[in-house]
Image (tube, rainbow, N blue to C red; front, side, top):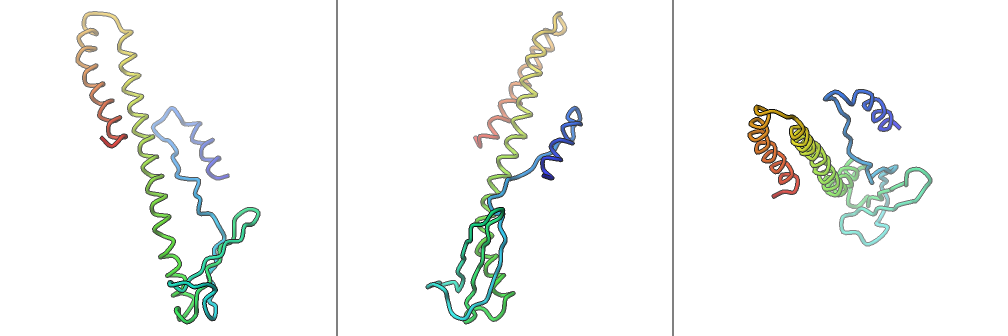
Length: 151
């Protein structure tokens, strides 16, 4: 809901350089719990066993921690977070790359629109400017589009 409000409100100032950009939606929304248990639920080398209960709204994820491996709940939570973080890091890394590329593509489009706009202006001086500007704008547009492709 908040994201949609921001999109709506920032659309009102679309003519400015201010814009709204967001990552997501995240696939990691859930109610997350860590509980200590006597003995492992399953054969787990890490001493952690994650159980997912599908629910309306957010799923419930309970990480059962073997009390023979972890001395207290804080130690178990740290271990659970350490196992989950790498997956989340990769997801958000790719999401940020995608957001950056979308921003770069907007700059490429601006350069193309400038090129098209310069073609409609008449006069000798404008022909000279068009000749010099066109090469620069094409180089800028190509450089940006190449950067978004990683080449």
